Image (cartoon, helix red, strand yellow):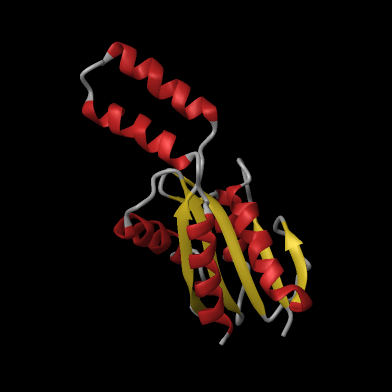
Length: 165
């Protein structure tokens, strides 16, 4: 089986997941990297960081070009810990996948965010010091700094094993 791992990154979180997938499937991976037109595989692992609750445009556009293949989606998002949020993200991603494909599932976990995000929150909280949502956002930012962590990678490996079997 020929496997391609296609992904886009900003902070390196999704790349970490992609490399973990490659490590576990090394002999079968024919390509790992950014989307390209000429990749022909049997199984595509497609990954993205999350932007405004969905995958980035380049990945959404790439997903639309794949037909009659097996696809498994993986990704990271700054706001973690909510299975329902991950499901919402995936439903948005799924809308870009042609029905001719066999969708094998998805894995999403929390990932660290760029420091500019925290700086934005700090500026906003200066103007609104009692804003509970901003306080939660700053706390979440700090918690996300450690993700993807070893627990996330173990869960990724379990997911990967379920996809390959």
